[in-house]
Length: 230
Length: 286
Image (tube, each protein chain N blue to C red):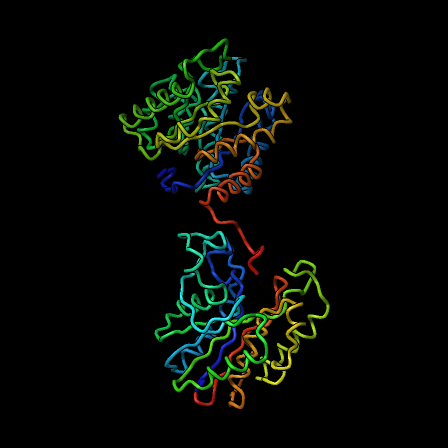
């Protein structure tokens, strides 16, 4: 049973050490902490984290590797380093001093609908009180200085995702086109669709969009979807 | 650790010391701050640009008209008092070799005695001890103030600079100067030809390895001019290159004419060394 869901983006700059002297992502981090705080406040037995990565894995363990981005701290071997999405999630949970078990997994950015449905059902069928944390970015081609430069098609798709997160509209998320999303560098498409499948038919009370902005050319969305039993 | 005016500075903090000449004839500014008004404007400007220290001097280093102690005091002491009144927290240095001038400057509020002629007046260190002032111990190989190098020879200029300045530093501490407030300076161009100054720059790590904080005074000097064949007024780029090399090797204080350019170089080198985070990093991380 999923008691609450949170959606956060996964840029490395949420790891404070990586942004230098100035904290360029303070507002974004605050919104993420609010969303994760709602999750933790729903008294879950377990936090299930689902993040995008190159390939899917049901269970991932490892450490945050700031060194992978040139940041401070010891060099972490590649096979011990968390993928970026899960590293950001780990940090958010650590910063909030989460004292519940955490299970982390990845979903391939190019996962097909069958895999999405399977992964969604696996979460939905869990008997415990699950707090679901989904790490997902929207488009990264929102301007000439964006990581993927400008692709004008992104705005309509991004607006769809934004509205879906604001209104807990699962059908719109499931209707996202995987190929178009891949072209627009929407890294969170598969993870968002797993979430939509997991919550298929569930009641979401008072969904809130806590952040929606693209200060660096990537659309970051933070959402909180409390369940009826949250 | 380094302590100036009661404030402690960490091992990787670098400080910019801005030159303020109370002279009619210094090589770089040619008397621009000889009068009180322009001198005060210079202090305000360098403070607003982020200078950590001002270094006030009444006698140019090169040979010229003889300036006795009374005239040097007239040029410096009241000005130090006025700067102290306007900038209570600013570290004020006075560039003098004379103990009598140093004493009057400390009475007026100076925090640091920049003994640019390397202990020529041995009582200057005693003045520093008496007033709990900091002291710069400079390598001049014992030459008379305001003399130019002529066919100077060293077996090993860096070894000479290290032993000479460390000797002065240890003597100062034995006289009661706070060990955290003693700096050493290889003194580029003083009793040195350009080859000597270049070698000191190249091997500055041997001075920083002594553990004494190192001050370098590179700004627009002849070793830069001769290296690039450029006159005074066109030596900033070369000065900044030398600044970067010294910063890479751990020099702590930089005596300069140009404050913001120096600050940028120091901040950049500190970022490259990994002792100061970049100001703001987003590239590739969004």
